Length: 511
Ligand code: IFM
Image 1 (cartoon, helix red, strand yellow):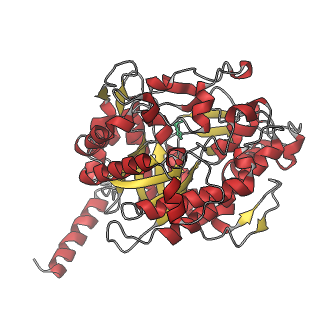
Image 2 (tube, protein in one colour):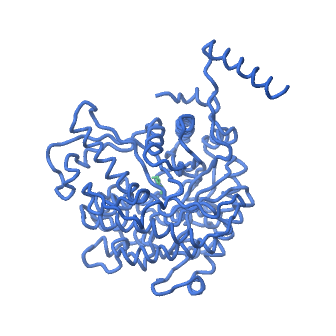
Image 3 (cartoon, rainbow, N blue to C red):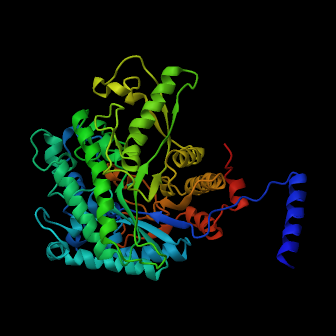
């Protein structure tokens, strides 16, 4: 059949299908789409079956100090107290984990994080240039990350590397001391803005050169607002981040600005240092940022106060930061008065979107926090978070596409599924279906990463949350992995590069 004949036959078939009311088949995902699972170093490394704990655990980070120090009384209901030894031991078991991701789940990519404090266990202030940094870098950690990258390659998995997934080296951030007294602690993390930005950019440039031949896709920071909010404003049992202090508005703004600047300087450093094209596709380094974007709605759409409050929350939680790192519009006082900073603009090759929930916002006439005067019409205590709302992924993706016109990657979405009762299967099908709908409607979506590959240490909640495609027996000496039902469902979606219709029907994707 010639091309012309084929086109005529195809047009007749399409006209017949439409005339008979048949729905056209969904387009699925683009060719070359990344299907992956995401993990982060601190959350998965600890708890090795046979390696010495001192090798397996990264003892040089603020988060390690935070979970191993006796819990301060005011955080007793917030911290799990789970010991590092209960972690999944991925530092030792990475190769088997990656083998499963490829052979059993059918993935083609994994997102993982390098741990800054593993690579530089001691301060890098005053040390300049690759060779001088190499001399003080931890050679075992570098060798280990090269081995992980070789394993990913051997299993046909492309790496997406996060440079900073919440944790800071203890030499930069005294998590416990700053929790106890933020005014007097001396290693103040993001609050030592110039130092933090300078040193994290140095680290980013160093690893980009060291691993650039194996990595093309980089993410600078993970969920910066999830460092600011539970770190300096509202630590809670849901999420606390060191220093976990309450209502420190000035500090929250300083951390916000530091992380905006850190992204820009890390972007520049990686672009300069990674000139090796790992997969020969013509691009040596693509650098983005990972941001948690909740769908946000007014409690009562007919109430002007609620509508305004929802707009305020969306700005404060999401677009204030993204406008700064994408458009160079920095609202340093968070007073809705952004200033142009050309040194921040245009430093985003793609935006990583973490999607978990919709939040519902209620307006109020009373200023709950005068310090947040621009947002005085909402009360953070009335926000209702963690609602399961798959359609929100579509809404968020379309909104971000319209606002920023950037390629998007779903860098995390997933759910705790402790009883393996189909919760994960429902989640992945419904969220992939809404992602597929966004692609159909023109969103430039490049990848979908399930959170998470294995059960992991969920920050202050320890091992109580079970996000893994694979369950991990936290008390078993070998840290046995068992596939959850989600594995089979996700494999079918990833290998078909679309949501099969029977799955869409089983887990009703309409809302
Ligand atoms: O475990 C976290 C991850 O580190 C960041 N995004 C949300 C996940 C689930 O809470």
